[in-house]
Image 1 (cartoon, rainbow, N blue to C red):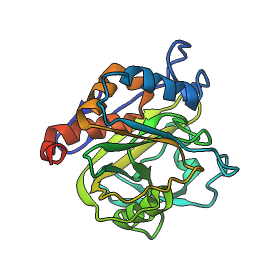
Image 2: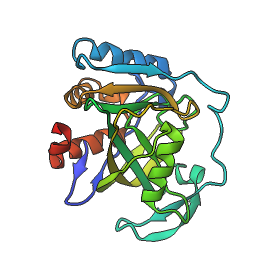
Image 3: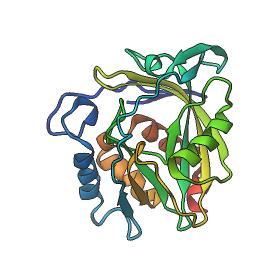
Image 4: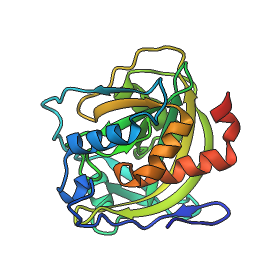
Length: 242
């Protein structure tokens, strides 16, 4: 279970080789299976305004992010070096900067994305609206705006909420070891244009429906979403009511 401290949260998760659970990182189930799992859990329990959209795959799904240097940091967010994105996630992973964006739409629903089949880690899992990394020479806030536009085709103000540290392993495919900054934004009816190379599907859930889905089937969601959402509910509940 996640362990929390005053500033940082850490998590160590491993994908178990259990055929009866949706584990895309172990190859037991693909994105369609996890999408179906979430759909079954949400029947009658995810709110009348729940909405799911499947994004057709593109020929870029399996593209590799070569030459993208990420920012290595210590636990206090001091820069200690730079490393290629792929090597950052090898083995147990190297601690690096990352960010997660949570968006609510004009109806108050939280926008979730399903990670594309081409993802090295947690392919096919449901996650928050946008999650990525700043590159060398780029601030986290700049990177958040860049990826928001690249992944969803929108640009809007983002509010920084908090930062947390976690470590999660995905079987023998590698690990996430991140100091993750969490941002919050509000859509005002803008149409989303998801990049099919990054996103396999979109889902919009009312906040309480997302909380229930995480309780019912946590294995269908990325570990960083689970940690961040819990802290949002604990420390920023007003954002869920507005």
